[in-house]
Image (cartoon, rainbow, N blue to C red; front, side, top):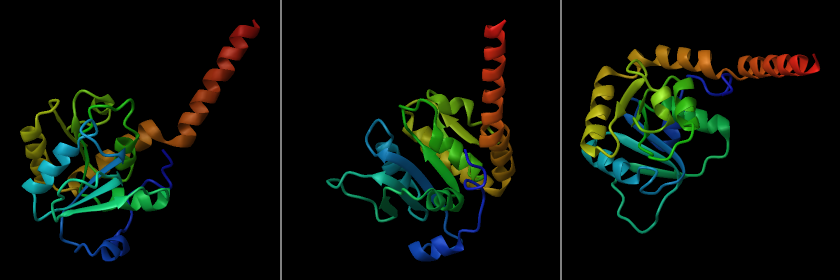
Length: 193
């Protein structure tokens, strides 16, 4: 994860562009395409449970369902700086997917200092600790909604430092590239012997 792009930042301008007041809680979800497997039912249920919060969905969304008025669907975001702004603006990143190999979106959110609510069954279990958000039993939608409230109550600031530190420790691009290069050099030298 590029720590120079995915980092906590001022998002006043993004809030103004999207007409979201600075005191309104923002719940964010990112998926290339929203479906049941990616957690669309949980996103809809969460939006309905928190009508005073603004939910933002990034990615392709179905057109043929009724959308709660507090969901903004922004489509695909290809500009990674803009994507990092969305992560930074969010009070919570929601990842209710049951299909995650690694959870790059979760790692990007953490890098921006944003806590995560996700299911326990995906790779997110290795990324999200209690100091960085909350994990939920698979498909327990009521618990998912409840954990969102718990994290909102704690407030983002109580998670931001731990989220960022975790990302810097495990996902800093140059550090990880150097570690891989050192490993490859070691393997090449061993093979040469």
